[in-house]
Length: 453
Image (cartoon, rainbow, N blue to C red; front, side, top):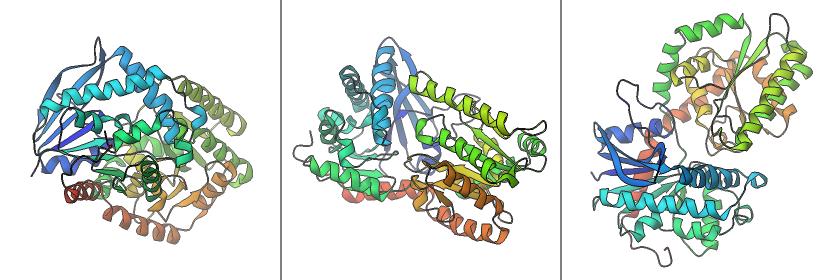
């Protein structure tokens, strides 16, 4: 079996005497890493005097982790600037928040060239390269320019907007031309694939773009939740609720997650459905991310104020309606919280997939499952038909969804859960990875397309 080479912005290098990385891409690729030799290449998460240099290598089992540092300036330009200040809002349909600066564009492409220059000497002739996410749109072309002839796949974990919106990106056709050096491109949903395919064809490239919805290991997460619910943190949470129903939200602190609208929706629930006052608690876990970006600092202030206002308007001496946490909570602990929750509240404004929604479903007690209230703009909405779908732009619709979930009889909750857990078991993380790699293998090593440079 050919070696798999994974490229991502950050690399989850295991540390001595620490548990392996438990979230994100590492979980999704767990099965693929366990069954083949792998090289995982990317940024170390550290900044220094210069970008690149000899990569640091750590081998654990069949996986070698290869990382490089970024210069402080390149971190600002490539990561904070172009990736998070321009591409992230654009791809999440928030062009009004996007800021284009030529120096950041240049830094973004320079870092990708440095990635290619450092990775190329580590490659073997029969490697299969799998590049992940928007940080590395130019990387396949940079590798081709460096002489790489291996099969290259690319997976976009976030949405891709319709062509008229994408065209607002200055020099966007250059990124499409560079992305066209891949042999196969994967997206989370069929609409995202259609949008990206239209953009590529409009720029003159006919590259296979197909949806491969990412999954989770539902059985493993269920076991983790069943164990965690008996743990100290879950017992403390249950005791503190005093019999109240728990509504749980788990997200990074990011404007794409619809957190202000979510809190306003919860406030609307308390106003419009007073029977729930004093009987429900919203626990929102939102670890701070990208705290050095001004838009995220502004968002945190807004959310702090909203949570305080709701508690001030509706709270009582023995009831705090909103519990607001901006520190990270370990994934096993969250698994137990999911199992305790009566409602999972997942309302992003736009999301590629949203694995929290799937984890909530997987964690439920089959005899007494909770209900998922889910944004219709999350990729997971295509699969989780048992969820109550809401438009996150309408706080009153969120309130109505919450009310429907809270009053839903056990028989209906079970039926919805049975349907959704069957989907999760079929569309697992292992099935996602193997499906993409099998499709890439079928395409085979093709000559570089004309004009793809």
